[in-house]
Length: 364
Image (cartoon, rainbow, N blue to C red; front, top):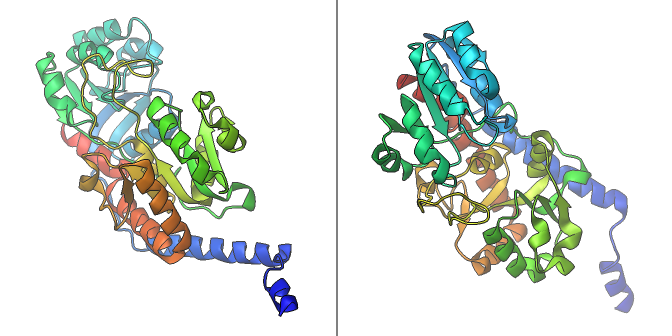
């Protein structure tokens, strides 16, 4: 009997482990392909417009918007935050669409916008970092003809701060960038989180540290030196920027990707001096699901508009609940993959930039 017990607990040969891993990866990717074959075709209406697009320098969003505009308008010209007035004067577009108007935009940004309007050219800004920079956006919004925001709670806020017209416009995903891929073992993990170590995220992972310590975990981004439990989580931390292509690999390779929205509190990480509430979902929500991966996200008020918790996405409200759900879905592979595949289908049918830009252009 002892010999039998020893045989039962003998470690699997590396070749057998590799075979099982390869089989599981093939099944996951095959399921994603099957879902993509069910995606409803979408042909945007071609509009007789010339749009000057001013990017914010974040490829995960900018590339999706540019491609969608190229497919939807007669001409799309890509300008620069530093030379937007000069670009508008040279190209004479029907409208200038500015992404965010924050971070990389120069000090004379608003003077340039006023100059563009003086040329008789319509201007629009799409705020996609709401509500984290209301100290800045409360002023910026007054200088544009049209304000789009991905945060519905910000619509009355901008209207009350002098914006002439405000439209709720949620974000989306570029499926040409975020998509299912076949993944090699170096990108395969039980649990993945990619993002800045904001304090609410730090608190969550510090609490989860004893549970995560014996899992295969990948955590990447800045500010993770803030962790208290680096003794347990330190080996999992990859400090610094992860480019979109690598992010896609890690999302595809994870059994579960955790999504945690940043806190809305004004302070060290935010400039939300107007204390605006955040209900919108972040772009990561769409990006994870577009990779055909199981996602567990903290609950946001607007989430049920876009996904069905328990059907194509999973949610949590406390660290204990998150730990419980991770345990469950790591053990129940078929349920995990089925939810991930449904999330992929929902995303590609409803939340691509091609569809979102078509809706945005109706207002222009």
